[in-house]
Image 1: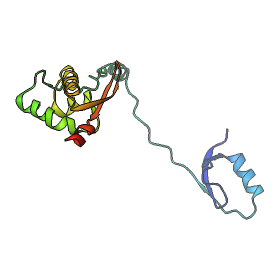
Image 2: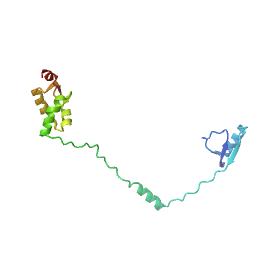
Image 3: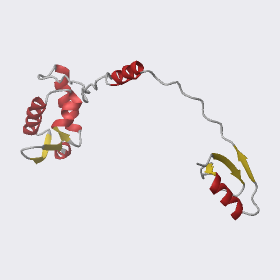
Image 4: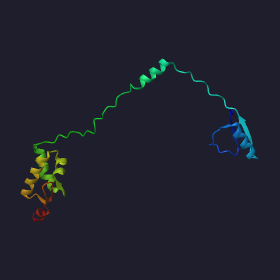
Length: 155
């Protein structure tokens, strides 16, 4: 059985393993003529103290006692508190600001006045009947209104 030792050479790839057997080291020396080789005897790594059976058993038992994964609550949105009835200030803002908007939908009115969707739908229908706003597209799912420009020209 050959002993293993490390070597350094100028023309050796540094990524090659540093441990080589005696036979292959001599083959390397005979094949390479202008190579400087230095033999370094590696020191044995310090001996690690063996664990006793009790310590091994304790380590094996402790491995399975990790914390259980907790389920996340998921993304939570802030609960909006939209009003279901108009206050005096909101009704005045509805009559003054909404007819001046270029694009009027239920969702824009809900965001602007902080009222419920049902209240916004009924308020927009009432403004359309009065002639303050003009319907552009009325479908089952979405109602789109715009400001009534013809009314401003008549006044």
